[in-house]
Amino acid sequence: MPDQYRRLAVFVDRPSPGSFLWIILESTEDPAVWLDLETGDDKFDNWLDAYNAGNAALLSYVDDELVGPENSTPEADDEYDD
Image (cartoon, rainbow, N blue to C red; front, side):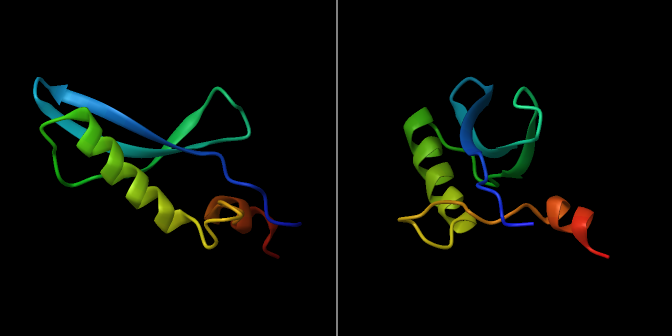
């Protein structure tokens, strides 16, 4: 099966006032269900810095920035291994 185009997103959470962290999410086959792939270790004192750090981390999921995230998820690869 050919690789699918991954639906990835950066989400910024505020666990407490003045403390922000980024989370990278990936959509499943059910577009209403998103899985947490990665959460940043560092907390930021504003939303924008957390968002920018999350976007930088998101690029690690992309082999070619001009094409985007074409790789299939490891779970999808496991489903088709015989």
